[in-house]
Image (cartoon, rainbow, N blue to C red; front, side):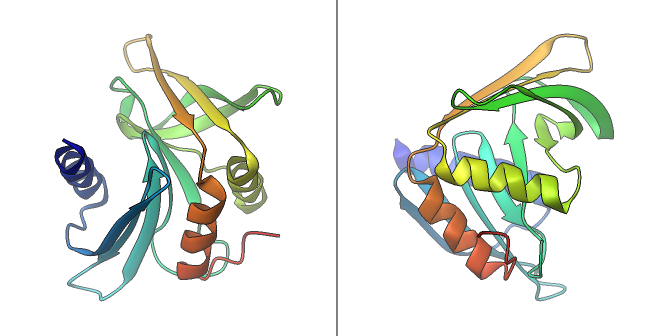
Length: 165
């Protein structure tokens, strides 16, 4: 059953990223570590995900990590901006503008904001997310962050992102 779930998740990630060759994949503490090679550019793309939370880079380089959340409902398309809220543990609720495509939402504002979110995820225990959707409803995600520190350290190193303290 777990392999079927991982395969389905890989298929969803493939459809979201348009890069479908898994060069390396393993699971640790509930996080899937994934390396994808683009056969046309030879650029390596790295990501880690658990449930509906993804930390990734599109190409290695300084400050290249960002967070994507896959909601439970269709959010919107064409990377239009939507309102969202997220909360890690008992920290204050953060209101953000997300850029959505289908069920996924990129939590990208600027490098310092991405770095702050990634560091909070690395030390947190629970991530909660909700966003407005195209149809004026809401999409939610809730992820247990056990193992996040190791997963984020790995993707940070692979992406050469230099985004951890």
